[in-house]
Length: 628
Image (cartoon, rainbow, N blue to C red; front, side, top):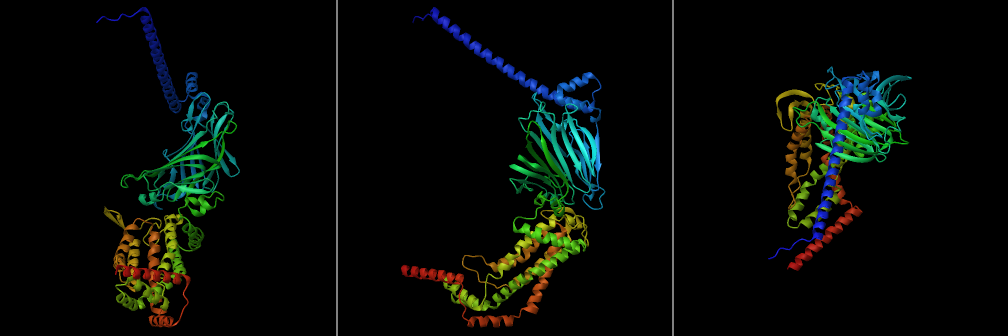
């Protein structure tokens, strides 16, 4: 076959096409090379900046060559690096409450101690220190108009100290010139855990790019301060207020928990009995929050409990920053936090939600405060327990009377069960008639128990939150806010621990005898078809409940176990008095027989129940007829 020859025009076209392709490819390669070169320059620029910042603290500039190098790396803020007072300088301010050390590097707090408050135990020489060894950072990240990005934690501030009356003012300024600066301003007041804290810029409108917010990052690795790190960690959590007066928290039990909220008013890094709080007068538009559990193994991870992180944007107005805030470092004490009016800081306290929190806030905290003002704390707990049991005694009385009535009427109920054992509907009707005639309410024994649940739960929240119990001793317990260790075991029992606490043992024994007493007086109801035998379950619970108490409370606050021990002992005494001195079974039975002879008008609920049962019985009889 003859090959087709290419004409001149075809050769020209192919040449043009090849040239076009070569131009496109070579152009793209050039662009890629330019992109790579830009990225390389950016990386080198960042590395140079970081090296220069590190070099500032290792070797302060002494000649013009070093100064020029810092200007190339730090731009306008190289001015602060050239100030003689900017190197290795610390400011220490001490009051009766706090000792605060400020660092010129980053302008933030380097160490913060709570004076007079001891860590782990009251005999410890170690003072509770919330900040030390770089466990906490406060950093402001911003962009300059020459497209540099700076982090204040790496930069040099010039410190000055002055007085405003009794207050000490510490000013940390990151300067771009003598009269242009970013300032962290702290006001430390005597006998106060709250610091005034201001972040503002002056004369930096031509230096900082105010079109983008500056990012304020606050971080804290919470030091362990209590005897039991697991118990302390259970109550270590981040709490925050947002969207007006709403409050929420990050999980204390999760390995990692985070949230993003809008319109945030305060952020609290709460430890068990201490807290660090950042408050703002100008609401943060948003906040990114994170909590990380640092206790993976209680035998190894014994220094820190949680790592808290919060990031909030600070918006520029007129090209400048001006945020008035507060920093609280101190006890997580309800009374102290409440003293800061209008701040809503009591929300940091885990007093329970709804009615449980109200009971604590308006009853238990004020009453216990009065008792503890003139009684030792252990005696105050016993006195509070006695008051609670006296107030609850009418409910206990009604519960016992209901149980006694059910016990006396039990033979007649058994007769009905036997007579109508093949007719469940009829059996239920006749039983209800008997209850109504005798004046017995089968629910009366349950309702008092339900009424005590809010009190029970409120106290369960109150004792672990009571800062006043911290390191207060009673009998063999050296700290009512932690477990009472009477025997240290050479091994660890799963779910129990490596020690034996005596108060939980006493509370478990008291619960056993209380349940033995009350269960024995309850009527033994015949099990319904298809339903579990509740009498057998209750007999098993007599032994399971004390055992659960023993394991559950072995690592809890001894003050809580002391309350439950005394409470159950008092309840046993009240039940014995009611049974043997107040309620007479013969008189009660006579009263029930009199009730049977009286015609009592049925209530709406009783009439409705009777109608429903009659309708159900009629339907059942109709079904039987249809089958026949």
